[in-house]
Image (cartoon, rainbow, N blue to C red; front, side):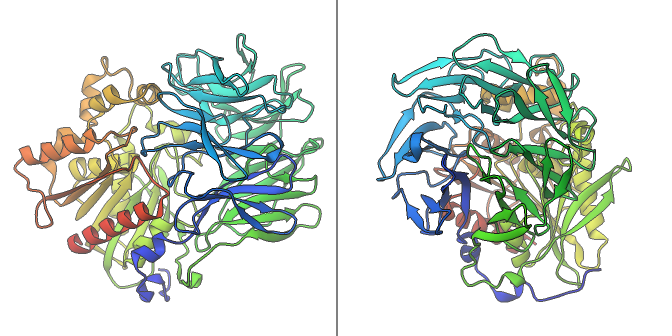
Length: 619
């Protein structure tokens, strides 16, 4: 049993204070390596800033003319005089690409129906050619997500690929001379497969890189300066690894030694070093490889979660300095500068706490428990007391994601409200390799939901938990899980909260964008051939089992899980004779001007207050 100590719940912190803590997003190094661009909400709304890496001075570029809620990363323009970003007006992810100049003038660049994302800038890739003449982006305006080239001078777009499966925009990069784009998609019949490709940015047939086996996931994250080698990843051996692909003879030299799941991130400016992050017990550790010798070393940063920094340099500043973001279970995200030769660390952007003592935050403990089939499930436990009290099982989205050991404002908020929290990384989660991640394929809504239920049963045995006061809470796929738990596994729960969750998988398929249709088919098969399976795994077809209060919260502009998913479930509950309201059998809230999620402070405050009020009354 963990020892009790003073925590944020003892300090009577209001939800508004926690939700309003300033944050920064999408740090990206300028082409000359002298500045860092990023979004920050220190003013109460998100604005675009740059920071001098020489003297640390901040400059605000925007004044209310960038999105209140972010979608994707950013890209520096030619000569560092402008910055490209994504604008999503209504929270419906119908992103257009805009540009803003140093004097604060912003205007649209790529405007069309559907989603448009700059290629690779959500990670550490690049989308603008070296001469600043064109951008590479992915869009579904013509159907499936495919690569497009936008010529800035001609104001003209050309489609570069015609894949039937989506092109993934979160990895991939433009070659140093701008002649080729590396990206990932799947052209096989194996739904688990992802291959890496290269296409000429002037057009032509894409070429597949010979990486890994069919059924594995391959990716390209960066190019070496010589334009003849690429930094790649692959999970053929189960745990994803980092390697160097040589285009001259189509060979791969693997750098990883199987010490954990690794994701490659970036190559240094001189090509001598490669950066990756290694996952360990729901945390990530930065790893730097000497490319010539293959030797690696883990960088000495606080235990938690580390991510890279965007831009053409991938966070490398010169040959001996590296920018990284770092956060721990109790310390909010900060930007570090790591001197590689001296192992010296300095902080470039400090976390802000608005008067809250950070020592009051709860450090999660990594725990494991057995599911029904004896599979070990890893989880993060936030526990602050010894006497029995209410608890929450928090289910992450995805399912291809994980709850990590970084600072989680949502979970710290629940702790501040007095709840013990368990956040399981159920089967289907990332961070444990290909086999564990693929457990959910063709079993969507099956054993991974048993993993969640077993988390509640494990939690109920702890001295700090009242077994009659456990709620399930989740968003997106976590919202789907909350619906499933309350309808198909209702025994351990006293209440449930489903935010932007799915309830009717057949209807979801009909209303989904092409790339989301592909994702559902990968997990559940063809909806015509597997109609009964879709129905069986839909919570809406099990509403007769609802025993305890369930709360549906949904954004009206959500394109991933349309508002119809919540409305259909509400109607099904009423058909069962259940009543809506604070004293009723279920509660229901639609959030106007909001989509699948939000980084906007006002919207975070509203979500926190709704959740706190429901759990306080129901538990």
